[in-house]
Length: 413
Image (cartoon, rainbow, N blue to C red; front, side, top):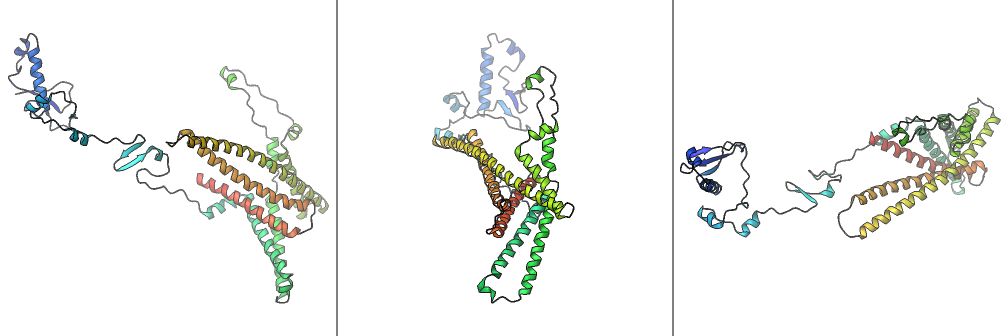
């Protein structure tokens, strides 16, 4: 038996041919019509495929074994039985046929993975939800007190908490039931004097912390707004950019948004009032500046409430539109969620969060409006109680917003 290797064939195939079948070059050359040679090669290949002694043999030194299909044979059952091959039954073939996975599923060992789980936050290999980054409360407060605004809010909470304690103490002290049973009135009076002095000091400290806040709205007015000097078509054809001339300062002030102007005027008047309390400016001028600051605060609060109401109306319309689309998608029938549905659900969640914070801001502005109304219109009925409660609630809401802002900033860092 002679052995031959096909050029270009894998290393694990070798062709073994009997000596009686075309073993010499002369026998191949003298074969006129080629039918005898074709029959010999076909018989040799067929025998090797079904385990006969001659034909293709597997190289034991090969890195891998050939992939031979048991279903791809074109040999008749008679030839197979004569060669020692028993045809498989239909049940055996069905048992060897791999069961197909669902269309939307993939297999990884013993773990079944759906495509809808690939975008989830669960680790598909371990099945464990990864832990989200945790921000400590002390880290958030450290970031809050780094800024003057954060220190102002922290002192505001302390100030109005002490005022609320003083208010509760005074209401208990004037009670006719407890007036006869109280002891040590001198100690209670001294304590209240100390609390009131602390509240006044905290109020002045807060005003000093927010000095020169008018620089922010001033920069918004004087800073030139970015203007598109050329369109995309002009840039495409290489036209020169047409620069607009700078507007005079008076023109910028006259065309500034009303909320920005109110913030600027409120900041300047509030600083003058603070300087008068520090003894730098005349008391009369400081009192007038304080009145002007209260009116500016009152007007700015109303303007901000109107803006928030308009913005919430737009958000409500967008949420209703997305909810309508999601409802129509759900009524179309059960099935896998489309990409548009996933995008709508994500955007709807974002809009709900925005609406939540708009409601928080609106509630805070309502408390500010009640507080400043007592200052502007000089209301006397339950002034101390109303101003204390509304001031404390406003400080809590503003601190809550600031806390959330710094928490999200730390999570992104």
